[in-house]
Length: 231
Image (cartoon, rainbow, N blue to C red):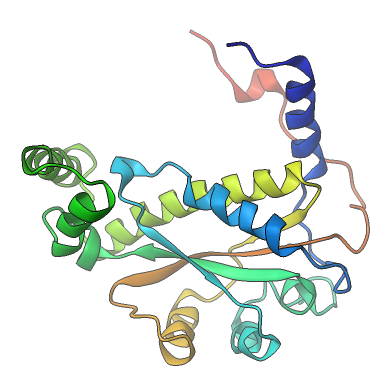
């Protein structure tokens, strides 16, 4: 079934509308139903092997957001002299990525995921264990805790991309944020948010809301010819 032309234009309009919003209008809040749609776009996102190696942490309390202020330069306005996304975003959060403790082939966590979430029969679970084990040990050689956490982080970025696209289609602004100290953020999650950091690591922060002003510069990208090669 072909895509209707007006849908194509809506998609491109949304991508041209979206930009990395540094300062939001703190008086303009995203409605509960709109943000539920954004979260659902994330929840329904594809992940490698369908393992869903991510968790979304929403941080709405101003006091709880402040735990990240000193070491999250990408979210605290350091680059533009404002309170940044931490102080102005309607919704702020972190996507956590699974570690080797849960995402190693054959783990108890994955066996439970196959049975209770994917509802697979035992013979198919055996196939998954073999295929994923080969993927980790041979195909991609993702076996250390750092490698597995980074692989889980790749899945988290798919999730966030879909959340941002869903938001843009609704005229809601967003910003992915990598400007933070990984070690200190991990410590804060353990100390203040009851996150078991042996199982979960921070992958990327995010902010959603409505822009305080339009972008000062036009969107720039490499040309299609420089970006895509056909064979």
